[in-house]
Image 1 (cartoon, helix red, strand yellow):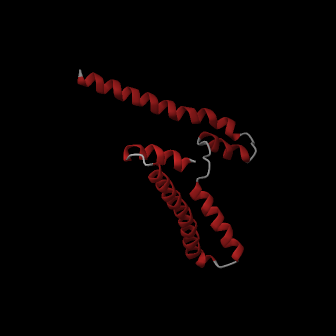
Image 2 (tube, one colour; image 1 turned 135 degrees about the vertical axis):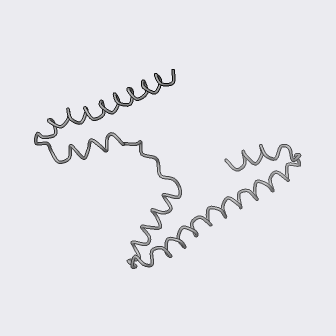
Image 3 (tube, helix red, strand yellow; image 1 turned 180 degrees about the vertical axis):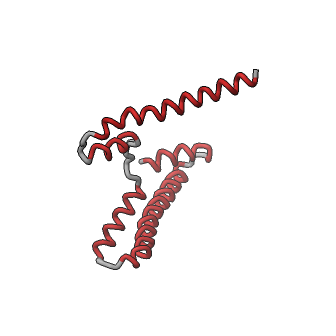
Length: 129
């Protein structure tokens, strides 16, 4: 029984291998005809094409900092230090704003006199708005 399963599996692999090698041979005559230079390059790109993602906030920050660096006209050696300070400054501003918003919402919750069980729902709605 095991021997027949092994033989069947090997036959299946041989069939798949033969099918894979036969397809490029059939496509070879079409490739010998003169074709535009863009056609072969476009075929792999279409095969491996993935939907483009929307840029994230980090991508946007990096683009802004990179544009700022190009505007300075500095040498590429200084780019890493510039990008580090630029990205950290922009990230810190965002964290500072979030912390201020959380403090404000917490103060508003304390003023309502509600119990701690309701705090999570209150903070969620307050931070969104």
